[in-house]
Length: 190
Image 1 (cartoon, rainbow, N blue to C red):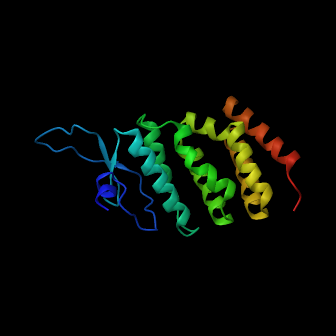
Image 2 (image 1 turned 90 degrees about the vertical axis):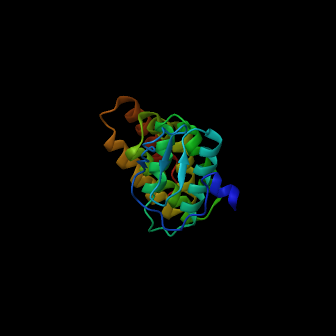
Image 3 (image 1 turned 180 degrees about the vertical axis):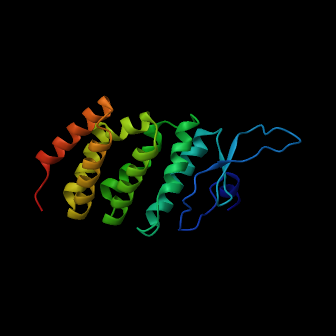
């Protein structure tokens, strides 16, 4: 109710806007004491409270997981990355709400998580990319891919794409090549 509106967690529609967050203009008569971002849906995103940012990121991810597969996760990714770029949340903190759906949820949710991870890799900072390319996250997505052929095909596609895309970045390339090798040797044939 009112608490959710005050906390910036007002219910959102199931179709997520794909525009990036734009800084809201501070009032001209008096400077804003709390930095905020105004999203296309009119929700004010607090850039001051990590606790509110964590709750908002969890709610945003849940909303994306419940939306149709055709919904573009760009808005979700942009908001999560905004929290990292402003220093409010760490890459680990924005990824944490993705763990359970990737491990336990239905195929739709797993594919949505994989698509969110892809968006974070494409547009994220080096810290976000290193976190996703690390052994923990690549093993998580590989494990999800081994359970279901549809998810497995998407995981293989992403690992191959990421490996090729980041071939000029030595640390990322090393992590992604290792992840691809683990995937290739551990993969259960369809």
